[in-house]
Image 1: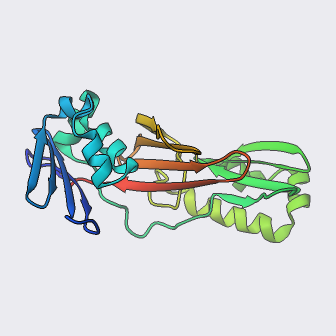
Image 2: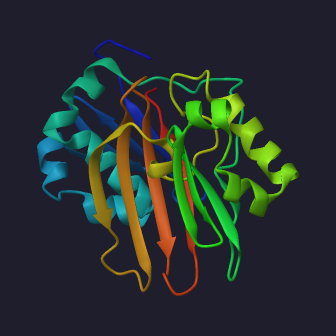
Image 3: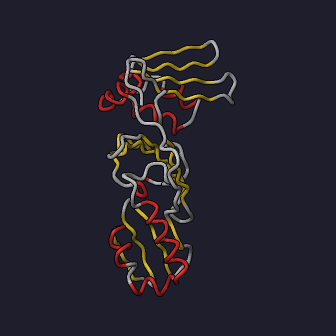
Length: 228
């Protein structure tokens, strides 16, 4: 984490011609494409200035990430920066089972394990699972191997103070975050939204992108936002 007047957030797009560079600092937003350099203050950017240009040079997700940092509530992030990645943390699946017609599905959401087995829902804490196991009916439906796999996942996550850098794909899977902004893509022909949120525990900043259709499936992805 940086914490001086030079704290900056950068997004690079090397694959376009000309390549793009977006820089956001307390002093404002700068978009550079070849010899073309455009600058606006954070308030102007938050009000819409340069938004179309950033979208054309990058993508919708980058635009939403930059807009989140341009908000008045994000001044402290621009002054202090945000943490880098936690190296060496285990990447743990959050969804087990499921699928069309499946008899059971289990989710790890934050520090809880929830799901259903034979249409019977359950929702327990990590501590309850490790002390008591899954409910008997759920255990019988899943079988010993699947129960052991889920228990190992919970054992890996339990000692950690937060879920950052453990393979979460959605904000619900992470848990304990505060949202800064959510924007829906105005021209997408399916559900397409990006949320930027900060971990309540360590202060890490993430963007969560969701695309898809409730009649078919969703694609979810998390991206860490770091200060340079």
